[in-house]
Amino acid sequence: MIDQFSLEGRTAVVTGANTGIGQASAVALAGAGAKIVAVGRSAMDETKEKIDAPERFHAIRADLSVTANLAPVIEEAIAWSGGVDILVNNAGIIRRNAALDFTEDDWDAVMDTNLKSAFFLSQAAARHMKERGGGRIVNIASLMSFQGGIRIASYTAAKSGLAGMTRLLACEWASLGINVNAVAPGYVVTNNTEALRNDPVRYQAILDRIPAGHWAEPEDIAGAVVYLASDAARYVHGILLPVDGGWLAR
Ligand code: NAP
Image (cartoon, rainbow, N blue to C red; front, side, top):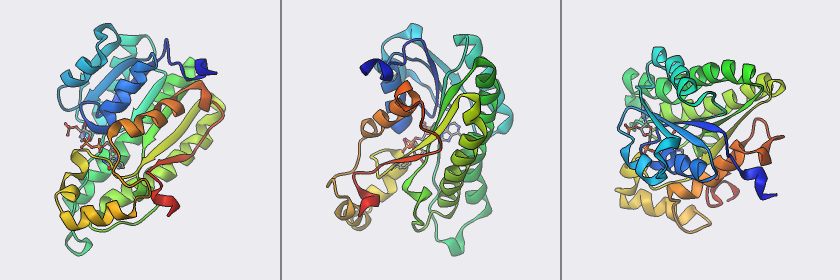
């Protein structure tokens, strides 16, 4: 049974892998045996050190909010590894402001990075996976794929869009042997939530609602990414798997 979770011989492209959930996912996928292509706009040295297998690690520097950068990322990943089996669309940003004051820049920046880039990177990867006979795409969604939230209009729109996109791509690509799914993390201690954690009232209100009684660490999310990337999930298509300490069950 445990063999079904092995990613030995596979290559995983992970975006935003220098920190947070992306870094924890890259480390976990490598731990399951995958070669890692870490993509982002910052240096990947810390992630490379954590993986501690330089021959199974390749970094690509790219700003993913620029669509023209996306297909070349997949081309370089294929050139380095020989073939891409897994794509984890993790890179994301958040902008906080009241909806009445929300700016076009805060709308476009989040939509481009969190939604548009995930679509066109998936398209580039799936064109390759189709020829390869299959693959896995794991999107990092959010509780805001299910709920509204406050002060994060473009983030909620992008993560809700990512949920719909996950289902659509699953329907179109399941017959190609490509599984498209998403993990929906709860509240995780990363740069993304720094402002929330620095607000004692909001922090406590969130904590009080989490059945597990604590925020997640990035490593709490990574197991679900490995599962959806593995053969154990071979008949799983188009789901959003919450990893939220029970938040949505409440
Ligand atoms: P994070 O530590 O801020 O990580 C975000 C990652 O995305 C970083 O590696 C960042 O690179 C990268 N990134 C942002 N814009 C980019 C761009 N234009 N091009 C390339 N890379 C870019 O936060 P995180 O919490 O781990 O976020 C990872 C994902 O989880 C995001 O999609 C986020 O929405 C989602 N998520 C987080 C939570 C949470 O509670 N933390 C909950 C649900 C979902 P830099 O370091 O260079 O900025």
